[in-house]
Structure formats: structure tokens, C-alpha cells
Length: 403
Image (cartoon, rainbow, N blue to C red; front, side):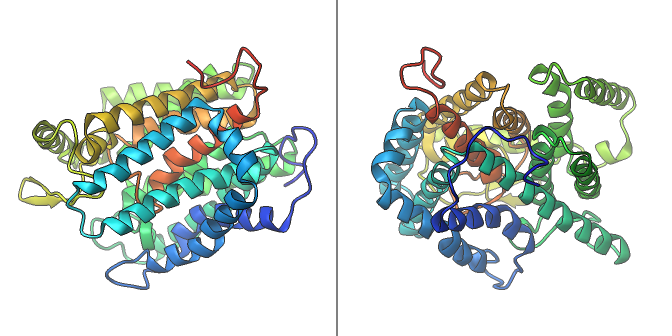
């Protein structure tokens, strides 16, 4: 694996604390797929406990031991200051929120901060570490996808006939989004050794096989657009152009004659949910309901506890100020990826940005909460983009993420 991925120069020795952080960063995506639903009322409780030991604790230690260096590097990036403003606004909203446990919400905001700082502490000065970690995580997730897929085909499908995982990704859409993120990492990272290219092809096949079985059309669309747009930042890669052309041709055919699997469930009530979400936003446009405030949207006799759209969900909870901060943060992530498109992690950020920008319009809108697939779609690329910007010389006129 070490020789299969492109290296970016020298690398500092891996300390015990670095390895501890790396274990937590690896466990966050993999643990989503393998931890059992051990507690009926909160399937993620055991998973959260393992993250507290493997990720949050070492991130706290890094923040305390190297606070001057880590915070100075992060503070030099305007996007990080926007991120802190977003967290501060969400924390302030707890004074008017109707959340059942405001203290838990504050802890979740802190966990998001720890996750972002963990990426900076682990790979801030050694981007090749992040490359290898994402590759290992994607391969492990592909193994999970293969296992779930085989079990699904062997057993008689129940429920709605769509595959899912377990624990915090025990729904088809959440599981599909998680596997789709791994697809993006595998496609954007460079694998030069032929044996690892074969491994990547097998892993991608397993992941796409699982995603097809989820019937998650939003993830399908997100991956398709990511494939079509990849040549924009990988212009020298002829295979990327070929894949983009093939995917684009398939999309055109499906638009002319859509398959039943694309039309059988209609729009899945998304337009009605969007309309109701706008009504709720109109009642509390400036302050929102507050971080973690419970609400319900009633559509077609069904009750929904979130809006299935990241923009409306943010505006409902944090009002228009929160929406503006999130939009500013997300645009700066794209700018960072684009300016670093010649680097592997820059391409990962761009691919993840396109993928998440589409997928989060249909589901998984909870971002400032406990670890969910949305973390892999938003906070992971933000953490990588932060590292890209922080590594630039401070006197460079091309410093990233600056106005």
C-alpha cells in the first residue's frame, strides 16, 4: 500500500499519538458499518463510546500538547474562522433551542471540532498519511460492502427490498452515501503499482454493487456527476475522459427512457418536504429553532424528523445566519480543492465536494450532530482542505481560502 500510493516527499516519523489518532480516523467510517445495533433505543451508543477513546481523547491531547502550533496553523486559514463562527452560532442557539438535552448538543459540537482538529494533527504536515489512511478505509469499507451484498442476495430480501448496513447506517440511503464516499476516495487517489490498481478495481466493483442494491437514486446521481466532472481537474487522465463520456451517455439514455427503478418511487415526497421546510423557515428566519431542536414535517400521512435537505435543515435549526456561514464554508472548501487540483488530496476534496453537494440535497442533512455519513461528506473534505491551506507559506500570494 505504501508504494502503491503516490508519495509527496519526506514524512515525519509516526509517533504513538499519531498512530492513536490514525486509528480513530480510520475507525470512524469503518465502525459505522460494522458496529452492531446493540442498544435498541440508540443504536450508535456503543459506536460513540469507541470513538471517545480512539478519536476524541487523542484529539484533545493533541490540542493541549501542541495547541500553539495546531491552532496557529488552523487560525491562519479564514475557512477555519468561518467554521468556528458556525460552531459558535450553533452553541449560542442552544439558549433558545427546544432540544431535549442541550448539554448533549454542546458535546456533539465539540466532537465535530475534535474531528477536524484530528485531521490537522494527524496529517497536517504529512499529507501522504491522509492518502494512505483513506485508501485503507476505502478497502475496508469495500470488504464490508461485499459481505453485506452477498448476505443480502443469499437471504430473502425483506422490507422494501433495499439493502442497508447496521448501526448508525441501518438505512439504505445512509449506507449508500457511506459507500459512495469510499468510491470517491478510491477514484481520486493515485495507485501506480499494477497490483494495487487491480485491488482498487475489485474494491470499486464491490462498492458499486452494494450501492446499486440500495436503490438510492440520490447517491447514483451524485456519483454520476462526480464521474462526469472529474476530467475538469484531471485533464491529463485519458481514462477519466472515457469514463465521463460513458457515464454522460448513460445519463442521456436514462433521461429519454428512464428505468422503472428510477420512477417507481416517484420523487419520494422530496418536493412536499421542501415546501413544508420553507414554511417552517419562514416562521423563524433569523434565529431558527436552535441546534438540535425537535420538529416534525407531516407529508402524505407520514411524519419526518428532518427535512432530507442540508440547506433547509440548516436554515430550520440555525436560521439564515447559519445557512450563510455553511454556504461560505462549503464554497471555500471547493476553492481549496480547485487550487490544489494537482495534488492527490486536492482531487479528493474536489470529488468529495461534488459528490456531497448532490447527495446532501436528498438525505443525511444532520451535520452538527454525532458521527453520521454526513461527516464523511462534509467534515472530512473540510479537514483535508484545512490541511491543504495550512501547509501553504503564509507570505504566498496564492494562499488558499483567502478572499
